[in-house]
Image 1 (cartoon, rainbow over the protein chains, first blue to last red):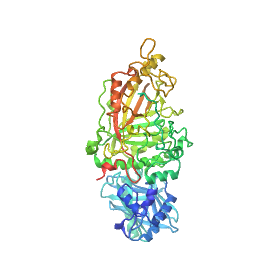
Image 2: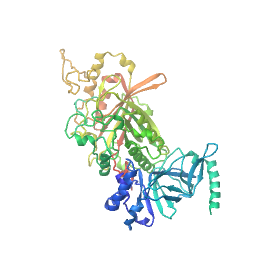
Image 3: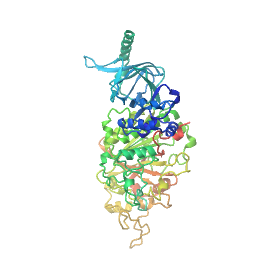
Image 4: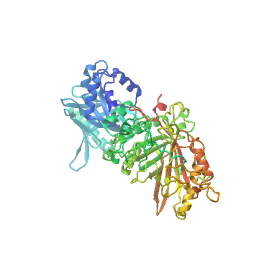
Length: 222
Length: 414
């Protein structure tokens, strides 16, 4: 967890202007750089992380402050994704999961998701229909309550990544961007894992139905 | 196998320790060194086991070992009562890239499981909460290096063991590209960790063999255990944190990148219970050279006493039979010793039971340490009447890793 917190102060200059959520993954290079950039912001980020992460060192995906503007570091830790991950898939579609955690006193509304490897990324919720079956449907946004969390889980609400244009392989990482209603973006670097569950999410018939439905919704929204 | 010098493996304060609390855990994680309850409290160089779970105020179910450290766990820790060993092969066509992905996954999963959190994809995280002293140990087999284009970093000793005449090897229990050793004080903890580690790697590896073993969970004898022949095994061990550390852990300069690695020998040894039943107690004690009641050498002294291999009886015959196990297994050179961490197996096959020992030994160089001893036992050992090796494998247990890294990273990056 200490490591995760140190990551919060790591500087990623090329993402200036974009708040970067980054899973503390496997790069020693980045770790070393992190130790070289210890600042007050680190301590702030650490204290925030300490509230919400568990023992696993790689458990937390932390906001990373742009190097050129350390004053925003505290704000950049506004949203974290704990234990975030993406299900591996060769083609078709997949999902991303984890616990969104809002460290601020204001609600944060996520209104869209973006990923280079998925042509049609969406925010989905899972509801139970009158027949008792799970149904997925696109939603306009996830509101992460002030000082609260919002669970993204198989069988529950999740980031739906449809129209894969490349394989998403286990043991690699996948970049996914969350966009808030005020335009703020968080780039997540999420570990990819094999997972046999979340089957309902990827059922072919279901997905076609949902995609049709989603398309309709998108049309009507616009 | 019972070497001749009575020593306990655990001694000094440098021993790997149990992590009792969050602060110790943090300190260990951040600094990449192992700091914990035992080493803080016990600075004496006692010959007693310093990390005995029995001595710990922490209930066995709550024991935790820190994954991120210089050395992997599951070697120097007092053997937990339950273990599963899994040998795996890279899928056909898989190579270095797939190995790298696998090591990243297993590193993260292992760290989480040992800390009490499930892996990211765990659908039964409640089963991960009770860590029960879980250790997960990862090693590479001799056949892996060519498949992953890593011949340049293959240690000289990381090659298949030589053939032994008395072995009757079942291919189902031989070799493997990779090994996972999962051990804990609870069989539930072991089973859950096994399930998770395999689930997360199904597209990368195929399982070659699985061996499940146990030791007496109700008696904490430290490193020794009774096997199902009733013998006390594992009394004599190298002092791995003291003078004999170099017998178990690779030291700087031996093999680049392999500091703090160790070599793991796994031998599946069938025990013929039916014919053992026909052997009387004196014959049994003669075969091993030890008293069955307490494991002491039949030449006298306590369990920890040195066997007097030269002692003779009234007739001028040697008290310890020329082919007694402890004589044949005794180190004739100081380096012919290794850390033994065996488990028993007792499994049903239809209406029959298969009984035996999963012999596990850790050493720096199996060619110098294990092989000459096994060659002597192969040549003559009274225990061979009742025992036979049916499985054999060797793995290079990777050095440990610091937070942010992954096992084998030094060989797989760039």
